[in-house]
Image (cartoon, rainbow, N blue to C red; front, side, top):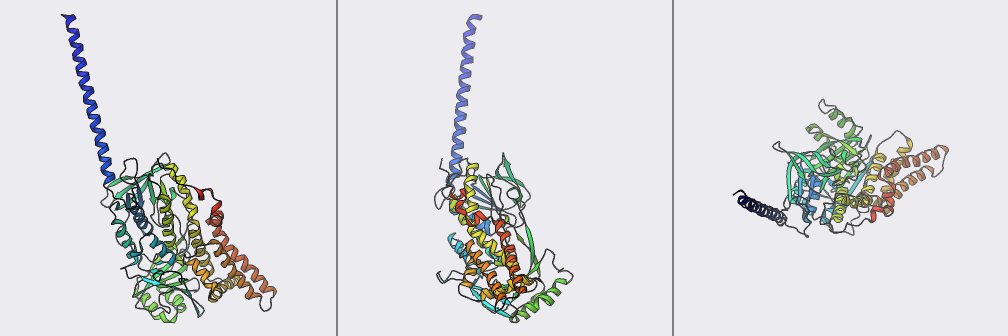
Length: 526
């Protein structure tokens, strides 16, 4: 009997083993089919405008954007329009209320058109700006943008910063593959040197993580994430004191007004059909106290006597009304650490003195460069290869960014009052040079406006101003004292512009074609 039982036991064991193997195979097949089905669903549920660009790892996001200011919102719309699945995380989605970021130069407006965002300056009572008026010691000169070769709609635009940002956010969020969420990003998620996503806290206090092949940090001048992606050398040369003048008419309609005051410039420009923004530059990081009345007294006794008489009464009325605000002016050259899986943009990446209103132009120009680099890529998952490829971004952006950055820093130093006689002569020479008209005004204004972002042209005009100042000193009869002042003028001009150029990068600024990354091609599709 025992011998007969052994075959039956073996048979039962064989049957049970076979059944278990068959069940395992069926379950495995169902699991694989389920994953395949869900992955297909996530891809097909997102529409693409200019062709599909998809992540190959099944992640439902291609790009995370931290921050939805000007740079973040414009970038989200641009990448979303190209078919990317974009997740934007912004600290506060209510309308911002700032005293800067209110003037978009014509060059920036052209970039806005190129990105398909020009309608964002509509329905916000934005004002066209056609140039600048410059005031010094009772004299004035008008400097017009060289817009003759452009459509009549092309000009600068001035507006309430918050209204402009809200329009851009709405435009980005209107795309089905762009998700806009309010939350505070607390850290970048790193794995073996590659950024995989972010950790953030939602509006209702939940701690969440989000993953994507590429994370772009655009969280502004107060960025708490930039230290892991760049070497920030932030300088605060001055502060802006902001006021709003109501129902006031500027001496030159639809123009920005720059007063070369003592100790530093004062700006006026329209931000709506009934409001004029005034920005008073105060050198250094410490400003008079608003709370105890020191600021109001400073504005009335030091600043008011230097503003044009046409707006004196409105200026004093604005001071009496209160609502005086301050903001530090930051300058930071771009000094990135190329990091796989991450990129810096906007004011988190690069800042310049806001005197020339070039910040938004640089940001929008950067977005155009990045869009063109990413457009041929379907898959963003190979982080090291993508990082190496995107090193070309830092070179390709230089002509526009370095021109505007250098001009902003140099002009601010020239426009500030100084007890040094050579600096005084340089300041006066700059005013007189621009007042000559013709190429002497259109050249510098085309640089400032972003219409002609050429670093070499900037350097030539800057030293032409210095040589013009020396010529005024030496004519009709030179004296040892005047020769000495002229020599110090040239030396001072060099001391202003060369450190800025060095910080921007001489090779990338003037000889970008010699940088290997300039020729970097998109990696082949897998």
